[in-house]
Amino acid sequence: MHSRMKDPNKGRLKRSSFSREPKLIEQGNQSILGIKNITPLETHAPTPPWEEEPMIIIHRHITNIESKSKCSDLELKELTCAYLDKNFPAKEWIRVYTDGSAEEAVTNGGSGVYIEMPNQETIESSIPTGTHCSNYKAELEAIKEALTILERITPSIPKARAVLLSDSRLGSEFEESVGEREEEEEEEEEEEEEEDNVCQESIPTNV
Image 1 (cartoon, rainbow, N blue to C red):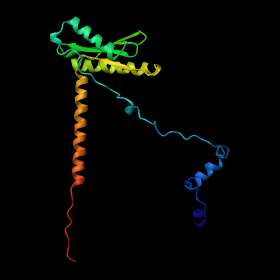
Image 2 (cartoon, rainbow, N blue to C red; image 1 turned 120 degrees about the vertical axis):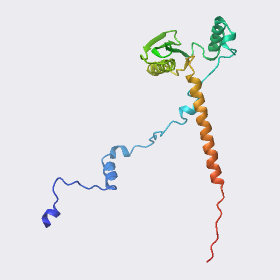
Image 3 (cartoon, helix red, strand yellow; image 1 turned 90 degrees about the horizontal axis):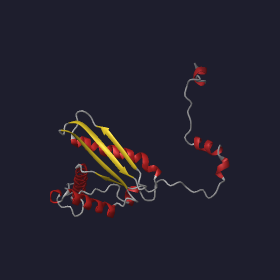
Image 4 (tube, one colour; image 1 turned 90 degrees about the vertical axis):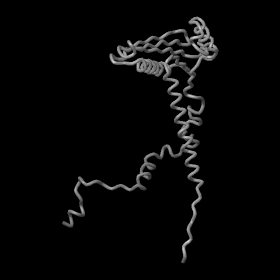
């Protein structure tokens, strides 16, 4: 029994020392330890991309268009084109147009995407969105398809910027949901501050 306990079998796990492992690694890499002026790797970008400029900007209205019913189709087109030329020049921006609809708003949905590149090339895509589909879902699928295409083509374009144009209310609802979430976060912060400012009264006890 003594010999068996003294010499454990080969299947037993060997213990290692935490302090010994770094020493072994150091001994095995002596050739690089003498190198001086090594520039340390940055743990993260100096300025996160989301702080450099807004990732998503939502414009709910076209300037000078107060009501569609008060303008003719030609006027709407001219005002929209002027707005795009001023804010999103065709030579600098990728213009993405999306649309989606369904028969009687509930069936046989379809989505379409039309993209104008700064080099005047165009990309078109159309997809079915299902037999049971609403206008809302068709609009959403069109935007998702557009984002999928942009994800594929933008890595090869330096400093690519894109504007997505849609007559859907998805953008407005997204903006409203973001605003509601920000208001909730502000209310939670105010409640936490109030809790921190509450004074606790100590009750003296007789010794």
